[in-house]
Length: 187
Image 1: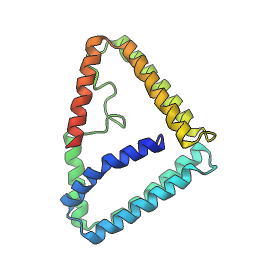
Image 2 (image 1 turned 90 degrees about the horizontal axis):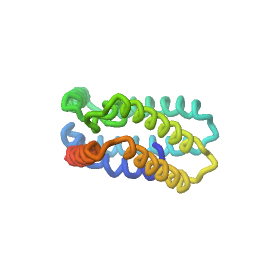
Image 3 (image 1 turned 120 degrees about the vertical axis):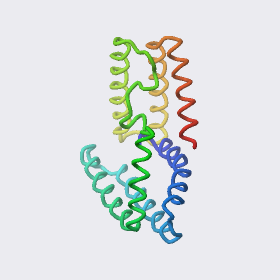
């Protein structure tokens, strides 16, 4: 959602889990085709929303409306048994702790033994990053390529600032935690 490149990377990452989910739910070819067309229509509508002249708040409300509309359509494709399976799969995933780290997972969970001072600095850093990222997203004067470039520069700056807060040992543990996370999410 931040930039087109991030959306494309997410789309590539989502392919394997979508196939696994389709297999576990026992989707028919007809259901797969319907779901694909629903996802494509949703994506197109979201893309056109990004290019609209709506305020950020209006866009947020419109995104919620679009999400609900397509969620309802997707639910209409599933059988009651598949809906039950989906609920069980979601409960299993939650129980295994595979929450998205950046969307509701524990903050600083990958960084062990932070002091209170480090926690405060990391919180400030995270809040600054989020504010700057939002400003980049909302800057309609930027092209997608400029937006990507600015966001990459912001990420690099954020990593450098984070390295100044952490000790060498914490940096190594964080790197190891990221590698482990990548291995788990590739399954």
